[in-house]
Length: 251
Length: 196
Image (tube, rainbow over all chains, first blue to last red; front, side, top):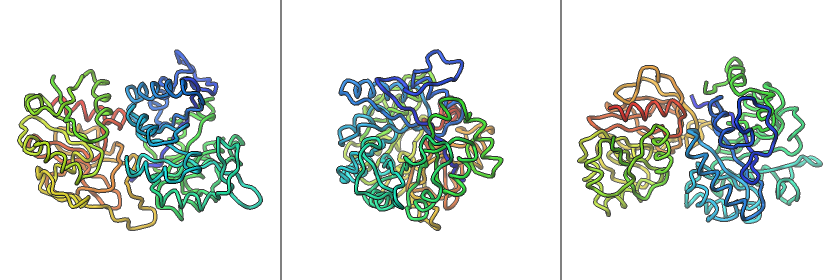
């Protein structure tokens, strides 16, 4: 049976992981390759590297990093951040990434999704959506949650699927950082209406939250950052917990 | 050991290259028939579309070359599908090494998403790629078309229906999953291939 996936997300700035990490046994806690390798050994099913650098120079550094990750890590990984055109996708896949995630650029120019899907296949195209719950609606945001748009989560997710997205990565800005769980109702609605996998993101604080994202939210994968980076939840323990709870995970 | 990766118009070649390098092998990536024929081991990787890829292989006189290889050959993902007789993807006539046709997954329930993407288990393992300890281990898949169970099936995975996760006939081995992306389990399978 296909396993539910656990995905740590690493934010990268100028080639280094941004968030502090309190893991021991690291030569360099800021080294994204070393951190990714440690997550892989711990049982992570995939990795996401998100480039939050804005500069041109930073982009080059990130591409070099993608090559190092591909050379050293034997599980699939997705890269995102600053992907605006097909050329960016070509560069990152050429450097060895398995998938790319597009966010703001796809909202600004939705045709980008179809272009990526027809050139490289739907399976490489993850559409990331940042949305906030406001006055009874899920409003989609641009630029890392800074600019509201006229798009609504469910309509935009459906459009992204129709245009050729291979997966939807939904981050609830309402839940992100609060550590009280994932937005399970919205996730379940996405799972019931879409025909592509949904990755839950934003809100994990306890192991139960992952269980609920899979059981109640029907998510195919759950992504988290700080609970893993700060060692609050260990992936090995999380997997064993989920297995005990009857969720099919790769051990 | 001289390991050659067949170079053609497909993606995924470099992740196989990286995986072999992690095992201490530096493969030759080439389309040169002489280099491919004299290699100790040949890997036929692939991510792409069956019809276009077959047209490319025909145009570059690579079909007879691949079918005529005598050393151990490992087809991966699309590489495995192209080693079959025919594929529903683009109605492609393929290499015919394995006497079976490639079919498109037909979802039976809403939860059946296509492509089949992620980690799934391999069972009923046979042949030289698989050591007994690999039974029921997870490997990484990404595919929308599948090879039905047949007499060459060397590993079985269940998604929508049971299908061939691996094939084996004579010197030809193939995996539907990506050993190069399947962590330590995939590394063991690649090692087993290199040790054939």
